[in-house]
Image 1 (cartoon, rainbow, N blue to C red):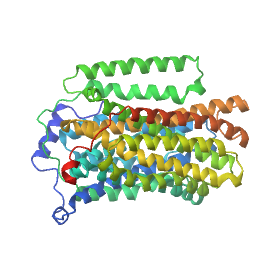
Image 2: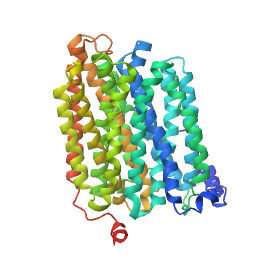
Image 3: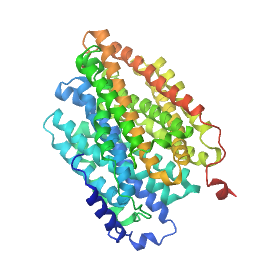
Image 4: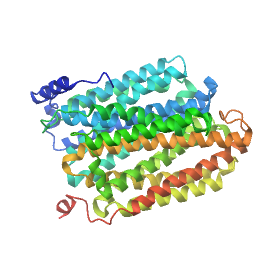
Length: 506
C-alpha cells in the first residue's frame, strides 16, 4: 500500500479520464438495444473467474496438505491470504474507482489477477504460494470493487434485481465449475495447473472489458484520499483473521494469539476513529445508520461464512472419510453452487416484486434445515451419499434464494450518491465472511481432531469416524452462522417494492 499513487497521480488519472483517455466502447456494441446486458455480461466474466478460483482452491487444500505435509492452519492460508488481501483492498479500490474511473481499474484488475495466477503456478513451496495468492487477491479486489457499481449503473433501478441476479448466477456457475475443474485438473495434471487455467480466461476478460464497458461518467471534483484508513485496514483485518485461523495452532493462552488479538482490537479501533474524522473516509460509516443496510451486511457476512465454511470442510470429508477420488469429490461438491445458481435467478426476479425480507429469511431457514439434515446423515457409508447430496442441494437452494435479494436490498438502502461505496462495502463484507468461515472451520476442525486423535495438525492420520465426528461440530458452527443471518434478515423492516420498480411495473 505504500506504493499506491499519491494525490498528484490520482488527479492526473482523473484528468486523463475526463479528457477522454478512458476509451469508449466499440460502437458496434454500444449501438445495440441490448447494450446494457453486454455490460452486465462483461462483468459476469470477472464474477465467473473469481468464483472458479475460490471454489477450485477449496478442492486444492487436501492435496496441498498431502503434497507439503503441512498443518491444516498453514494450508488454509492459501485460501485465507487471498481473501484477506481482497477484503483489505476492496474499499481502497472502491474509492479510487469513484475518483479516477471504473473501467481502467476493472481491466487492470484482470491483468493483475492473471499475473498472480501465473506466479502461483510457479511457486516452489507453500510460503511463496501464499505470498503470490496475495497478489492474486489484490487483482480480485480491483475487479470486485467495481463490479456491483458497473452493473447497477448499466441496469438502472428498475432492472437492478434482475441484473444482480444474473451476476449472482455467473458467480454460481463459477462456483459450480470450480470443484469439477479442480478435481479433473488435479487428477490429470500437476496442482500448478489449477492456477494456470485462469490465465486465458483473464486475458479474454481484459479484452472484453476494454471494448464493451463504458467510460465512467460524472467523476467528482474531490481528489482527496484517506491514506490513514488505507494503511490501517490491511493489518487490522490480517490480525483479526489470524486469531481465528491460528487459534488452535498457537493455543488459547499463547503470547502470539493474545498479542494478535490485542493488535486487532487496537487497529480496528484506530481505523473506526480515523474514518469518523476523515473528511473523505475510505468507508463512509454513515451508511450503517440505515438499519436495513447494517442488517443486510451482517447477514451477508454470516451467509458467506456458512457457505465457504462448508466448501472448506466437504472436500476433506469426501476424500478422507468417503474415500472419493478428487474428480468425484469435485463433482459432488458442485451440487451446492449448481442449486445456488438455479435459484439465484429466481431470487433476483422475485426481489423486484416481493422485496427482500421474506426471501432472505426463507433462504437462511432452508440452509439451517439442510445443515441439520447433513449433520444427521453424515456417517461415512457409501450408501448414505445420496442423502448427503440431498442436504447439500437443499443448502445451495437456500443460499440462492438469499444472496441476490440481500445484495439488492443493501444497494437499495444506500443513498444514490454512495452506490459505489455501498457496492464496495458489500464485497468487503463478503470477503470477510468467506475468510471467517474458512478460518473458523479450519481452527475448529483442527481442535476437535486434536481432542479425538491427539494430533490436530492435519487430517492425514485421522480415522474416518474421527474426522466425521469433528466435522459434525463444524456443521453445528455453520448452522449457527446461517441462523444469525436469518435473524438479522428478520430485523429488516418490511418493505414495499424496491425503488424504481413501481414505475417499471405500472
